[in-house]
Amino acid sequence: MNRQQALILVSASVLVGLIFGALWIRRGTTVEESAAEPNAASEMSAAVTGSVTLYFPGADGRLHPEVRGLDTSAEGAELVRRIVAGILSGPDTEGLFAPLPQSTKIGSALLGTDGTLYLDLSSSEYKVPPVAGSQRELLAAYSLVNSICGNVPRVSGVVLLWNSEQRTTFAGNLDTTRPLVPNRRFVSSSS
Image 1 (cartoon, rainbow, N blue to C red):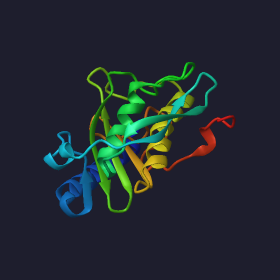
Image 2: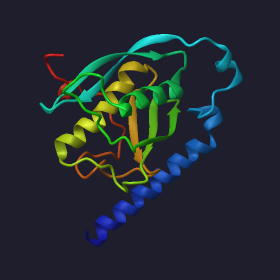
Image 3: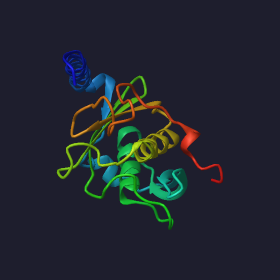
């Protein structure tokens, strides 16, 4: 990496940190953060099971939809957490696989008023997202993006963070300096 590339990378990281920090500080009015602990009101309400469509990679190099029953009583960032947990737990359909290893954890999920979701994923085992090759990287990212945006209308784009850091690429190939928007190009046409 030459000096100019390093300077751009450092500048981008600082800018992302400032944006994320500003969103965090102003979260009371501009960002909705998912709660790790349910509040008393949500504990009293009955769970509402609805169906969501989750997208999982297949051996054919495409994403395949899988309809799941899920507690959809939550909204916004908390619903996102439930959807991502469903994706990380893996598919029920034979021949499909989870886009990321089981050791992947959901960190924060911050939803801005502009519809941008900041999703922090992490793993104590991996410093970078553990996907090999550009196709696997695209499938992992768009498994998350298509599943979230397709089920949470308030989300228009997703910024993927790994271990609380926005990387210039998710795992070496996909540009993640801007929010990712749904992309049906990777979805199987037979689905």
